[in-house]
Image (cartoon, rainbow over all chains, first blue to last red):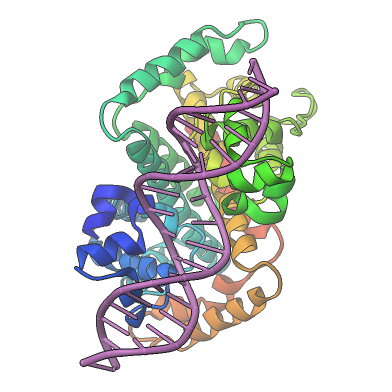
Length: 199
Length: 199
DNA sequence: ACCTGAACACCGTTCAAGT
DNA sequence: ACCTGAACACCGTTCAAGT
């Protein structure tokens, strides 16, 4: 976990884990099947930290939002572990507990069973995708180059011909806006509003 | 591109590309900067195939859905290239053209400028995340083990204690449902309905 | 049961040397 | 300008041999 946080998912190698434990890479195979197995274990660990509020404490929309925020935060806490979670069906006890909680909230919101099931795929997909993107950014710019990159992109977009890309040029400001969690919250609101419309 | 389709993103190595071209890996560096550069070029190539309908031909909701379907299909056409596109700001001419088209549709739908900008992030994020998941599944089960895996998961879920996970157990059927693009289309409908609500 | 050294079959990238 | 061989510093995994 320490290696994951300092070196990211790509920096997590069997060899690095082995030397951190004061042994050789081959010794790890006495305890785990392979690297995927190690990652599964780490994912389970990450899910331990999610804390869910009392389902009676707020309207379902707010509960769903709280859930997505919590999952995103828990993935974000462990640098680019999100990539590993995507496309996986969670089977660890902590992940199952979180999923069951979400299903309960959605059921009492009046969604059909199938809608609840699909929503339980869509919501973690969104949380995972956002956390994945952020993790990528973090590991690509381990430090200070990020402002330079954003400035470079902004400059490039500003230099685009308005006759060919009229809308991009017209909306440069909004496109480049990056205010805390606003982008994430927008997507979250859209999805929750869309779920409400599905009832 | 051929290597990407047959071996996936992880199978795409400098060395493999080099031998496919009848040369050594070092020779590639006379033409491209590094592997990321190669992948950027491939992403640009993949975006060439997207074809967008006339914006007057349908209501905005249908146009947006057509756009997301097209992006997903174009990413899906090239096995797990989607992973590489996530967290990237597209700068290639084909990607820009597609984005500008989408922005035009969203603007005429009556969304605020900021909502249009954020939606232009959310929609490709969804398309990319779905394509990424599918790509992962494809490369993990290069062939036939997939049914066995699904059956295994279903069995595991069925064995879960109902008192601890009442909702998961109650909704086993809907959770395991896998009917073509139904899951993808559900998410798409949710997001588009959510965007409509945002106006 | 657990650990180890050594090896196998790979990686991306660099660099001096060639044409 | 373009290419090359050889090397550097890595990977995940296996396997016979040890304790």
